[in-house]
Length: 404
Image 1 (spheres, rainbow, N blue to C red):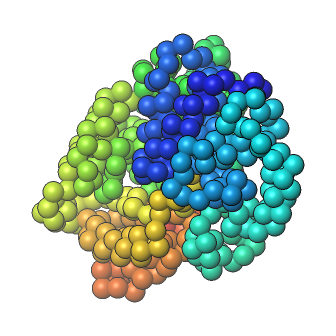
Image 2 (cartoon, rainbow, N blue to C red):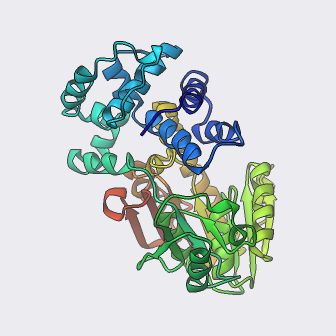
């Protein structure tokens, strides 16, 4: 591979924004990719994947390059040189790469690879927390899996097409996909590609949604004609899946505290031809109270640490703070206590997170079931999805039923 100056400069500019100014990696990369209309697919892939790679391995590369935050541009070029050397890419004779100690980089990499927090490139506190909650052996395997690049998984919109038809249509457009046996609505792209520019996407035939995330709506046991509340709907990936499972029959009330996310959901619902979704912003407790005892099904896709989705959000491990984990656990329990009251007698509730920590998952359900609000609920089943076992994102979901 030959390195091109303008592409490498874009990567360094992006890393400056992500590391030094706290910008979100996905947003930065979106902006970078609009820089030069002449870039082809390979150029764009280089900028996106290299930026993500250096973000993912920040701690390891900084340690090898012997640089400390805040990183100046020279520091970032040194980290870039580490990335290129470890990838076996020949460094051009640019001034940024003068005196790059290639052999020392490889030796240092071998040395640091014996220590998990460097090998998997994670802050000390996350390493300690993961090991404490999952045990050393499982945590090591899980972190290794969470550092792999995520596959692109599509969820077929069954309101408009079938899996087989979509697979054929994408094949004709030059995208090869494979069927995932245990995921009824999923297709996996054989090679990473930008599927958002296709007519199949703009016509609402599919959404991009990780395979683990697709399990959540299935877990909710919805039927056409029910009244379902998606209590933390966000931009509505799972809401849209629920709509397709309900065949557009019945009512879905999508709630969120962020109105802008619900606007995005409305836009996506229109594209998906999902007509049974009503959005309501939670601007006061009245919104929730009005729904008490009214829903057949409630989904609480709770805010969480997001440790199960580090493959697609590698910058999250640098943004997370220990006090956030404690705060989010309090929030999770408050949401469970309050929103569970929306379920009517005989109805069911799913509590889900994209975290792999038992303290955000099984422990929260146990605490809820022991509480006054949880006394009328029983746990029917739960599912823990770990990345190293599934090959997809880490997730947790619990199905609870409200008794007489």
